[in-house]
Amino acid sequence: MDNLVASNIRQRPIRTLVSVAGVALGVCLIMLFTGLARGMSNDLQRRASNVRAEIIFMRPGALQLSASTANLSTQYVDLLKGIEGVDDALPIIRYFFQGNKGFGFEQIDGVNWDGYARMNDIRIVAGHAPQDLNDIVIDETKARENHLALGDTMKPFGEKEYRITGIYSPESGARVKMSLAALQDALESKGKCTFIFVKLDDPNRLVEVAKRIDAKYPGNNIQPTQEVFTSIEKSVPYLGVFLRVLVGLAAVVSALVVMLAMYTTITERTREIGILKAMGASRGYIVGIIEKEAILISFIGLAAGFVLSLAVGFLIHRFYGLVFEYSWVWSLTAAVIGLGGGVLGALYPALRASNLDAVSALAYE
Image (cartoon, rainbow, N blue to C red; front, side, top):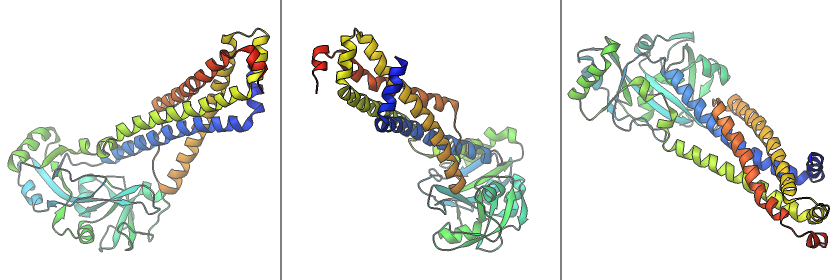
């Protein structure tokens, strides 16, 4: 029976390739989207872990991927410094913009460099800190992965060019930074910021100081910094729902492609099935042949999907800098969906073939 299955696949290469492509497409979609979500989330966590401020103070809704707002007065900086337990406070503008190559998005922070570098223990390893309104600095990871060097330019706000004057280490917050005054000027938000980093005298008193700030200035968001920047899923509305819908669509696509291929196969092999039944083949035997063929096609599609997703992820990371991190959980999910879709998709054609009347099948033209 195994030889018969392999022969059926070889004799119809176009149909086999279409079926394999359908399964591979479903697997590739699952792997790429979940890998991108996980990679971006972990990337944010790594960079957030290098932010040494314990509290972030901001207005509700200030941090959104769909829009960047600088709606918090920088006058709060001096007010926060006057609260017991606060060691330092730094205003930050965070702005989201489309990547230079037209794919994905990037972040840029407007900071008072000396204070930010001192608070987060980062240093310039090449060039110098932002001094003029057209100066920007990037971290070593971005410089390496995007092949950027001192003197190169970026256009975060359209046509205006900003020159890279420094490279810093380690990564902390957004990978691109400019002076707070420069970003305020670019966004026409003089005297405004997106949030304020609050450094405490004693990190163990975080809850106590947060309550004190909230009592003094109610109506603002006062959260531990690590909780704000730890998960991309919290920043993108309904991302979890989107991923679940994507998984469901991948399963449907795989099942429908295999079912269509197997149904067409039954029509093409009606006489062959009639001969098998005339020779005494049972219904289970015929169902087994078709299901084994579907499983073999699904396995080939799985392998092609995994290879394709790894290759595409590498190319996107290489040319656009987006981070992909694949997990065993989602890999197993993709494998189950690919195989399950193939088996279920072939079930109806297999049952239909097993119920064919031998005499009618032999007379089929």
